[in-house]
Length: 93
Image (tube, rainbow, N blue to C red; front, side, top):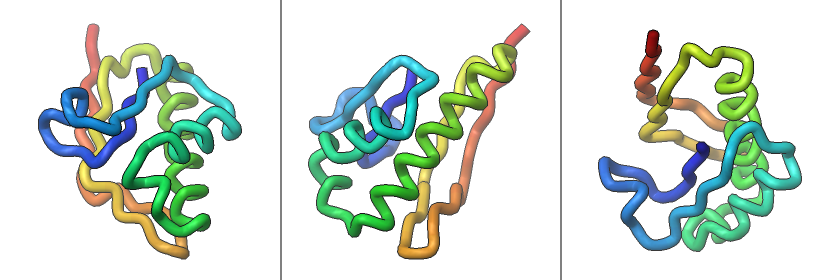
């Protein structure tokens, strides 16, 4: 499951959060980004970078089923791309 929104510890409970089942294609990622209220206001290059991160996270989940959760917060995005400032990857049995 991928969730996208403003973030924080209660991301799943905040308004404007969108989610889908991973993995996803770039077109679906772009739609999710466009449907997320605040993120849809970002520059086109930033939205594209966020969409690419969603695709990569979904692919990572598919290729590594031992990963049970990933939390990226914050994800800093500008015209040059995206950088995960902090991330937690949980590996299960």
